Length: 130
Image (tube, rainbow, N blue to C red; front, side, top):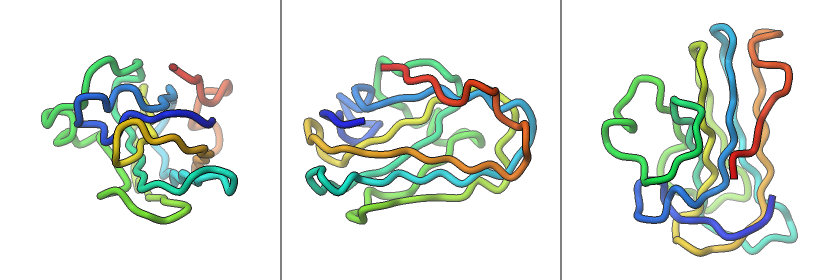
């Protein structure tokens, strides 16, 4: 996906970032990566997995960020690729958000997710929400 992003997810336009829905059917370990495409402009970026599985229409608040089922790549990083492990991803619906640090930046990115347990994710995989 290539396009404009909304900046950090807790910022005023954070909900404008690319979002995908993920349905996890059973406990599993997962590894999430976000790679900037080589043709894209280079940006600081981060990746978050938020409980709920719905398109976000407002910034992510501290109550969600403090949740035990909120996972993220840490502070925005200036690498071509960022990633993080989730040792135990419980069953449920999640929204995956790719973001840049600054609102309005344009970049291309590729999301990859790897699961330890076969059959732990709904067969359709990801559904793009925006």
